[in-house]
Image (tube, rainbow, N blue to C red; front, top):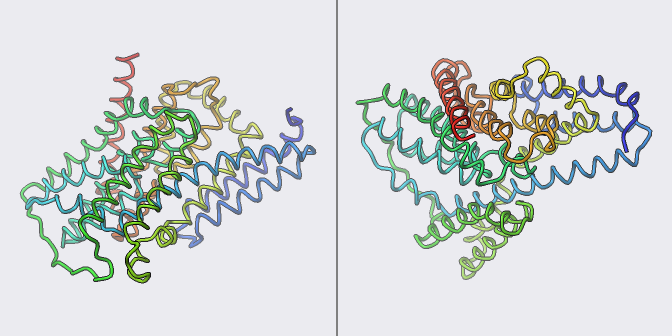
Length: 437
């Protein structure tokens, strides 16, 4: 059943206007001092309300909303499970398994170590969590704030590059994976090398700038007694948590069930194991290690933002606005690779989540089937393009808050490096695609 063209024509301009205003409020979150989650929810609510009032067939609109909610819920449940697992590992000081092995007296050597650890850790966790973990680690390894700023910039680039080639490493790649646009093995094979290049190029330049400079370590601070864990507990929760996250793509491949069920299944296993490990402790002593405590620490604001923005984009999809935009881009630009690279650069200015959500609505799986060039290149460009500006990715925003990075400092010192890396990786992907096609 299709909606009356006249009803769509009347609703579309107002829906676009609401979306643009909500989008502007999201992009200007910091100067406006209005949380982007609130802007996204208000935008989604207004758009669906206007859509329902403009169309006579309310049953069909209700069915479309239910369909969009089901797709959105799968992404949100997956992210909630993954974020909780990471919080549990961090509560057990599990990441010390990695940090304890990073030992060097030279800044440029440390830069390479941190870059590669961030790159691969981001692929297994996610770029936002990895950025928070690695910047927290830098505070333990580096005393000088100027040094930490450069490391924070590279961490943002490495985290976004690492997340782009993994189905669980970046929200946008996860969206494409859950939506059926990409498969786990194909995205790893197709995007790994370009992502590695997009990190290695800026990392090489920065490490050259830092050559010869020593690592100045801060004074060690003792941990609070209540947060201490045994070596067995740290190793168990680190390897079990990481193993669960890595096993989710295999779970989806074997069972053909949606990834959110795999991550929730794994979360249940981690919950049971944690309760068994700490069962003999007093309630006060084990509270910090429980899943209930971990759930209270996850970033619910980000999850609510995803709900709002995905539901808002869904109205543009159902009214065929995104299909019309896709036709206009095809007629105006023509080349798919240029279109995707434009989307990637745009993701450095505005959030890449709605850009990818819009692209998923603009281009159907009928025209671009699973693992098509368009989807793989979109995963790379949307994932790494956000590094060009500090506000272009969740990882950048997190780094900005943690190390008080100035917007224009990042533009001057890191943005150009990220752009060079982005273009180099894009060139590698296009060359690789033509050679293997």
